[in-house]
Image 1 (spheres, rainbow, N blue to C red):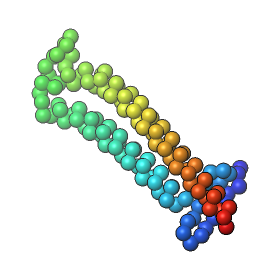
Image 2 (image 1 turned 30 degrees about the vertical axis):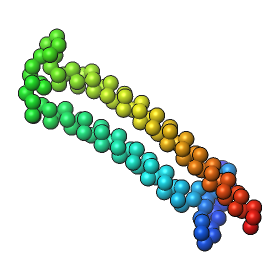
Image 3 (image 1 turned 60 degrees about the horizontal axis):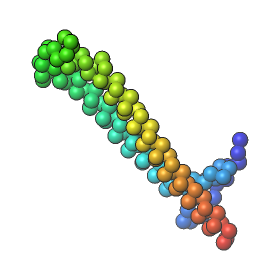
Image 4 (image 1 turned 180 degrees about the vertical axis):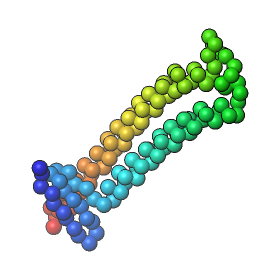
Length: 122
């Protein structure tokens, strides 16, 4: 395992593990961004999943009128389209999470560079 160092000053607290440096602000930003991404996709998943039985309550045609080959809209959505929705959501979530990870890695590098430069002048 690597060595962990805690640097505390009156203006900035950072924790270094190997070459990686975290500040309280950067950790807070990471948690906020990840929480926003997760809750957004969770809310979309919840809304679409809840819309399936809700549609059965509100629209009789959703579950009782055949639209293609004897299949109802409800059956087609639940048996086929819902899985495409889930796969699409998983794919877009992973792409968004990768973008977030890249952005946060760049931020961590900036913090590390600023901390090293600030430490050299002390």
